[in-house]
Amino acid sequence: MAGIYIHVPFCRHKCSYCDFVSFPDKIEYAEAYMACLYKELKMRGEELKDYEFDSVYFGGGTPSYIPPKLILGAMNQIRKCFKLTKDAEITLELNPGTIGEGKVKTYKEAGINRFSIGLQTAIDAQLEDIGRIHNVRDYVYATKLLKGENFSTDVMLGLKNQTKEDVAKTIEVASACGSKHISMYALTVEDGTPIYTDYLNGELPDSDEVAELYEYGRKLLADKGYERYEISNFAKKGYESRHNLTYWRRGEYIGVGVAASSFIKGKRFTNTFDLDEYMKCIISGYYPAVTSEEVSEADAKFEFIMLALRTKYGVSLSEYEKNFASRLEDDFPKALEKSDKYLEREGDIIRIKDEYLYVQNSVLMPFMEEPRDRG
Ligand code: SF4
Image (cartoon, rainbow, N blue to C red; front, side):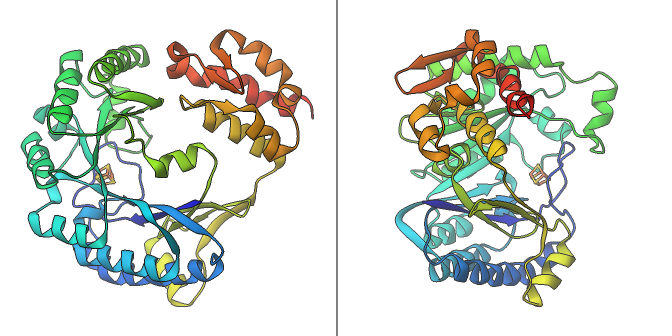
């Protein structure tokens, strides 16, 4: 099984921390862009006739910003060009500032059965500070429109003046509104974004403070019945994101649209980040790939371990052996020894102990170094 990712790169306004490929001033291109995207879907579909897909994810950008008929058109095209399982998980990212009754109706018609809502924080002053186009009431309204639907909520940590009480309020609101899944992740500050100035001025919480907020939020989420199944992802039982699990299990996926990445048939590649170039290439019948690489065996092994260790499911030793025809214990003896205190083993599974999941980078370092050690 594989996943399909669709990139919709339009936003009403650029958030101050945003480093994604999203254009705040190009909505008039939406129709022409999506026509190109439908064509790319057709081109990709012709090459992947032997594949079956069990998830679709509309990300961005703000997929809920463009006319909903374009999402419906994309789903019709996907069903025409790809083999999609009957129970496929179909997620759409939704910004609470861009939603209305009519849109929700069309999404349901398109078969969208999961929504991912960017709340970030339930403190209006913080939303304004980071340039979000919505307030908390918009979020509550959006969740009312989605009543009975499966939706996830994004919560951001590390905002200016953010306290534990703010995190508690955010989780409280998301949970009370019926969110089945919560992604709680730390703000990453990229050079060149407006928020970088706040970072340079020392106005943002440091990494220790963010770790404290995370730990506090994690406990609260556990009390409310959200189980952590990946470092930043928490779900009520049965509501884990299938699409994201495909990434963490090093499963295959095809990315369609500007800047979309794919991993399929042993290759990773990414489409151009340039909107005009993307459209020109597709109109002329070419794939607009800018990077393409075969993944070496050493990298594939590390990726397999790194992705699996992000999750509560850990690394399956037998799966590893099945994939690479070698034993993990033989490939990474030093790394296993160095990381011993962070890891636990249960039968076939090695995972990071719950209390160390947040610091997984230090656990992974020895695994990253080991294949290079051996030359
Ligand atoms: S809504 Fe998302 S993609 Fe758009 S500017 Fe904000 S963070 Fe970036």
